[in-house]
Structure formats: C-alpha cells, structure tokens
Amino acid sequence: MPPNDCRGKKPVPVTSFPSGYLASYVTELTGCGGPFSPWLIEASAGQTIQLTLFNFSLSTSSESSSAPTSCSAFAVVTEPAVVTRNVTVCGDGGDITGRQRHVYTSITNRLLLSVWLHRQITEDAPYFMLKYEGNVTTVRFFLVLFFLVVCISLLSVFFFCYQFLVNTKLCVKSSARFLCCFAKMPIKRKIRKYY
Image (tube, rainbow, N blue to C red; front, side, top):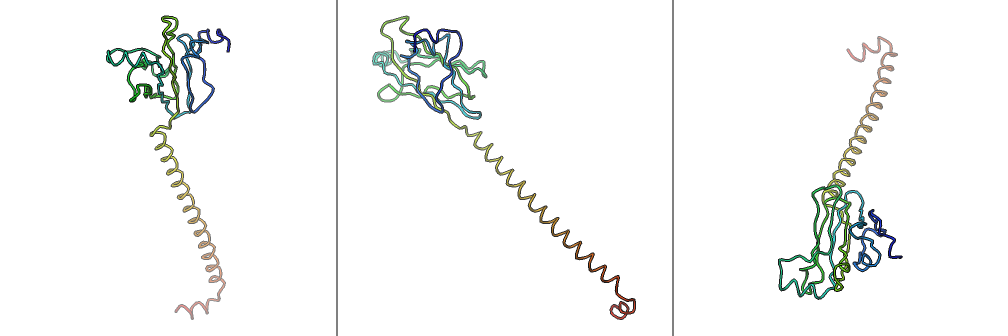
C-alpha cells in the first residue's frame, strides 16, 4: 500500500470481521489508523468490541517496571455514539511477559481507534498490535431468548384457539343436525317418547 493512501482526514473501515489484528507498523508506514484517519471498527448490531494489546517493545516493559504509574500511550479509543467515551490505551502492564493485555471493551458496536505515530517523535518507536473481536452481549442473548419464548407462547395460544374453534364448529353442526331431526319427528312420537 503506498505511504500516502490513508493521509486524508477520514476514518478507515477495517475489512475483516468478527476479529482481526491492527499493527502499529502499518500505521507508521501508511498513515492508516493514525490520528487523522483512525480505524473504524464496526460490529453487528447488539455486539460489543473487545480490544487486546500485544506489546512487542521490550523497552516499554522495562520502563513500566520502574515507573508503574506512567502511561506510555499507544492508541486512543473513541465511541462515536458515546461522546464522553475517550480512552487512552497504555503500553504498560499485561500478563507475566508484559506483552499481552486486555485493554478495552466497547459499550456500543462501533468505535474509532487512533494509533499514535511514535516514529514521528522518536526513532525508538514501540511495535505492537491490537486485536479486535466482536462479542455477543448478555443483554442481546436474553432479548433473543425472550423473543423466542414470546413467539412460542403466541403460537401455542393460536393453536389452542384454532382447535377450540374447530371443535366448537363441529359441536354446532352436530347440535343443529340433532335439532333438525327432532323437529321432523311426528308430535305423537315425541309425546310418547318424552312423556
């Protein structure tokens, strides 16, 4: 990809979903995912997006041990639907190796990810990747379950009403036939039979 393809001031949508990786090296090389053209990650409706950081910079890990309160900013996450949702992804912390760490779980199904261009500031730029992954929320699961239960209940009620109407119609027909036969009987036979 040519270096100037993503230098415009517009979001760059990711093409692979429900999961994928965004490398800082790609942003440094092309500008895609930078402050002026952030990555646009969009999941299906009802899903959230989980971000995991893979830090390949050994220097950042050593610095975090000496100054644990400092934040080596790697990226900024913004959710367009939540105005106040603006989170900085720091490079410190993580698992035993200090390389892998869960950094963010979105509230909505759409977010913007801006990777800091460290190479413009220093030659010793950290190398890292961010993994994005779509997750089905618990709320959506229960909503789908509730919808299925309601549909099954409505179908059951409809079937019961249908059976009731069919049986009622048969009873009406049988009663009508009985009344017609009774009306055609001679009066003397009726009197003998019922008195």
